[in-house]
Amino acid sequence: MEHYLAKKIVTLVLVAIVFISSACIEVSRAQGICNMTGEGLMSCKPSVTPPNPPTPTAKCCSALSHADMGCLCSYKNSQWLPSLGIDPKLAMQLPKKCKLPHSPNC
Image 1 (cartoon, one colour):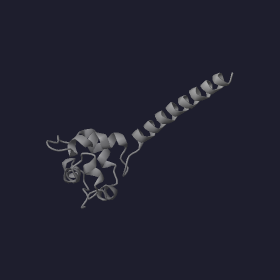
Image 2 (cartoon, helix red, strand yellow):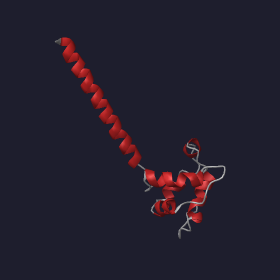
Image 3 (cartoon, helix red, strand yellow):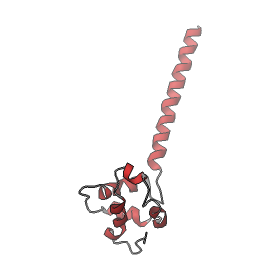
């Protein structure tokens, strides 16, 4: 009987871990920075990744148009961007490439 209860408890704990892990993954997908969703950031990533970045997509430019540019500028010298494969110089060129009316002066 004790073995049966222990097995049930372990099963319940494993189910809880799987559920919590799934929920955390969904939250991390939805999170973004500087008023850009994770999806918006990912749509821009090819355009800021060397060596031959493509022109930013309409989806990227739309996401960037809603971004807090001052906030994005604060990441200009961050080591976080290169660690993600993002070239900060290319990232700073995106607003101009997207023809945004108020490109930041970082």
